Image: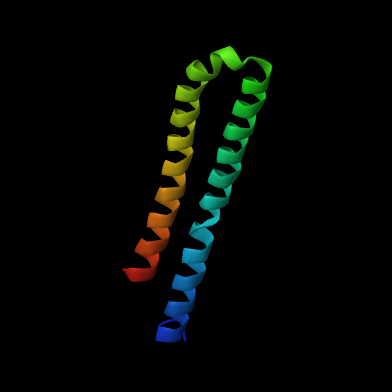
Length: 79
């Protein structure tokens, strides 16, 4: 039963689904970053240029986490 192809395929699909949970955290992080940027811009529009570099850096780091989670899902599914 444990060595059956259906069981292994089911475990593979469950593992790929669980590995995509990291995408949820990245989405929340990106929303928080841009929400706080809009708040900072509303308070002081003169510093928008200085803030935007940090916003892009934070976005890139959050997106990298999402891409790593997606890569793990693909590795689990197609390996």
